[in-house]
Length: 245
Ligand code: SF4
Image (cartoon, rainbow, N blue to C red; front, top):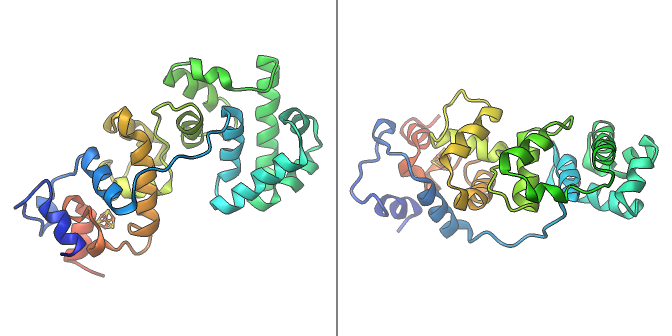
C-alpha cells in the first residue's frame, strides 16, 4: 500500500480526490495525526528561560539552526551573564555572534533588548511573562525592535508553554498550500488566521510537524505531492498532480 493509498483510505474513505475542486480541507487534528504517523511524536526540547529563548530566537532569524546554535553558544561562552553582554562594546558582541550571520544587525538588536529590559524591570529577566495573558505577553515582546510575531511566539511557546503559534516559512507555505489560509495573506496576518484555526492543545504539534513536513516533503521548490500523506485534502497538491509542470 502506498502512502497515497493510506491517505485516501483513512477518515474519508470513498472520497473522490481527483480534482482540487472536490478536495475537502483536512482538519487540524487530522493533519497532526497523519504527520505524527509519518515523522513521529514531538520530542522534548531543552526549555530555556524566556530571555535566553528571545536572544536565541533573534540569533536564529534568517539563518540555519546549526549557525544560530553556534552563535548562541559562542555568546554564552564569551560572556558569563546577560549583564556582561549589555555592557560590552558592540564590536565584541558582533564578533561573538558572527557564526549566525547578520551579526551587525543582530548585535544592536540584542543589546537594545537587554537595555530596555534592564531599564524597565531593573533586572535582566523575562520570567514575568509567565504571569501575563498570551495577548499581554505578545504585546510586550512586540515592542522590541526586530521582534516580530514569529519571534515573540517562539518565546511564548517554547519558553513559557503558552499556546501561541509561530508561523515560520515552512508553516506559512504548507498552510497556504493546504488552503488553511488564503493564497494572498501575508506572514503577519497568517499568525492571526492560524491562531483562530489551531486549537490551543494542537499549537505545538502543528508547528513542529508542519516544519518537518515542509523540510522533507512539501519543500518550497519541488514538493513531493505524490508521496504526501495530505494529498487528498490539499488543493495545491491536487493541482500539481493533475498538471505536472
Ligand atoms: Fe505540499 Fe503537495 Fe503535500 Fe500539498 S500535497 S501539502 S502541496 S507536498
